[in-house]
Image 1 (cartoon, helix red, strand yellow):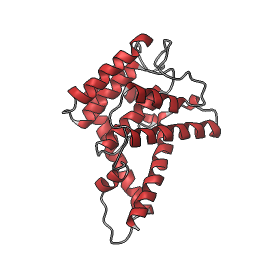
Image 2 (tube, rainbow, N blue to C red):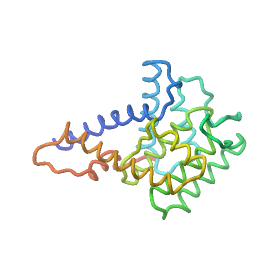
Image 3 (cartoon, rainbow, N blue to C red):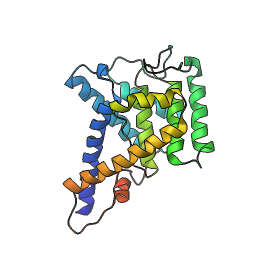
Image 4 (spheres, rainbow, N blue to C red):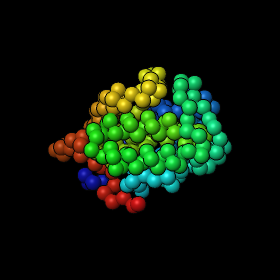
Length: 230
């Protein structure tokens, strides 16, 4: 019975999280109404499940698939962008040139897995995310893909996921624009702690069984499949 309850918690919390993630990660102009929003939710949930169940170590092919899943049915060319783009009206950096994207991402992945592996988790994820955003590998969906990679990376290391809600978007871009790794790491840690409390409260209100004591660390493990495929 406990296993069944935890499986139901996992399914329901993932949907609860992703619906809030859509609100926090998508600009209002990116969807025109409920149908568009539902498409975004379906696409993000598919990308989340792919990241959390199939991927141990990211590579270029994985990142392309994440972008394709996120941009599915939105008229965006698949794969890495072939054109120059701006990074949004709050960004003051120039994204990587299209011909540099594979090289820049490979260098970033190498640093993440082989150079930064001993760093504090939040600092490592802050560095990856900021550099990823400066590369801006897709025509659209860069914030969504970057934030999704960030939050699933945290989950796979045993840390609660994060949602960066719209009221923090200006602060978020200050971190990104200024390569403020330390500041962003502290921000992520704070958001992760908040999500840990939300996750446990969601469990307690809806699934807690009398006499069954499960702490938030155990709940976090429930979100990660015991066996992932490469």
